[in-house]
Amino acid sequence: KNTNMKNKHVVTYFLALCVASCTVVRPGEVAMKQRLGKLVDKTFKGGPVVYNPFITKVIKMNTRTIEKFNVLPLPTKEGLSVNAEITLLYHIEPTRAQSIYTQFGRNYEEIIVLSNFRATAREISARYTAKELYATERLKIEKAIFDELTNHIGQHGFVVDAVLLKDID
Image (cartoon, rainbow, N blue to C red; front, side, top):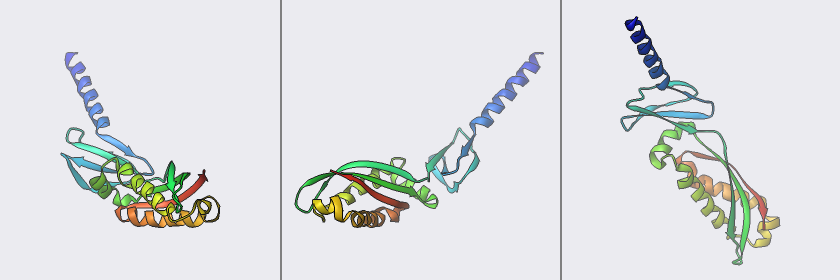
């Protein structure tokens, strides 16, 4: 009877270990294994991933399109400051997830995407007058920010899907 109870505990511990050593990579995510602090070269797409929880960590990264909404004070050609609601839609290239993680870490969005987005929006808006920002050149400004931002962050594995100027005060 005592041996039977020990066997049940062993089975329970084994099942708990099996569950703890498996994760699921969902659609729109990629995963990487970090074994003893070193990234394994393979990137995992959707499905289950088995790993040793004692020496391995699984890092998941979102590859879906992300929407970032900002209200930014933008300078104009005549030296005014205009508040603009700007939306950035972007995603990471799944094949570049490992290099993005290695180069920028988990806080890649703030480090490279948003900082470049804010700087690019300010740089481009300074080329236009307040009237042009507000009415006549909106599409041209969106395109210029899109192109410039793509040049800045595209080389690192980020895809800019759209830049939208929504409201200008």
